[in-house]
Image (cartoon, rainbow, N blue to C red):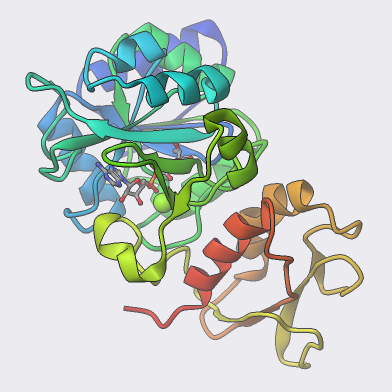
Length: 313
Ligand code: TXA
Ligand code: MG
């Protein structure tokens, strides 16, 4: 199939929404990474996502909504959900909530779970598309399963050109790592660190919040150990680089590229995936990466780097 490329004008969004309404796949920009969207209410459409990405079918998808009001049609709403959504939506936070009895979201998108992951993104193009379609859009990151997440149109095309109906160009994603996922099925727990950091969440909740540990991975089906994997092999916490390595620096550790010369974690987060894409030119490349402080946004960066460096499965 030929993958159409849309801009972000009104008539572009209309055509993209029509493709989704007809059961097609559209990659859309969000503030975190590009998502590969399909009508979340349609099993056949959602099946195409798994097929295009080569994604294990037990790994459930996030349903993107135009508003919290739309989200409440599908999930059991709670006081904590209200607090967190007021604080962080639209924005880079995903909530896992119990599905309503009559929840129409595709069982395939939910991977058969009795819960649903939902997010109201803030990117104007994603919002326009969701409002136009007026249905939830299931969307994982728009990359072949297990590879580096896309933060530009070029990244999307490099992985999925010819496998999806269309992609909308929204420029580079502003934030650069995926949303923070919080499960509210029981007491709140962070399933995946992301753009909203733990201190921000605790400030809104007025209490501490647990973070998923590696021992608990079973409850977060998507947290496969090897993920975000470049073609290259990856060495972490490198303070000196070897001649045969491509190097990714941070702060004073200067490499071929530097995530943030001023050691700013927000800048590093925004640059992470695009710099990995740049260094990851061919199979057999070795990439070495400087240490990143493990606080604030550094926790999300280190989570992605650990997966990028993990033994491949
Ligand atoms: O920023 C983001 O979250 C991006 C953009 C496109 O919105 N999306 C994204 O989707 O990162 P994906 O598919 O790469 O990651 C979704 C994660 C997976 O780890 C999956 O296991 C988890 O969400 N998830 C989805 N539904 C869940 C559920 N019911 N319970 C627990 N985890 C769930
Ligand atoms: Mg992903």
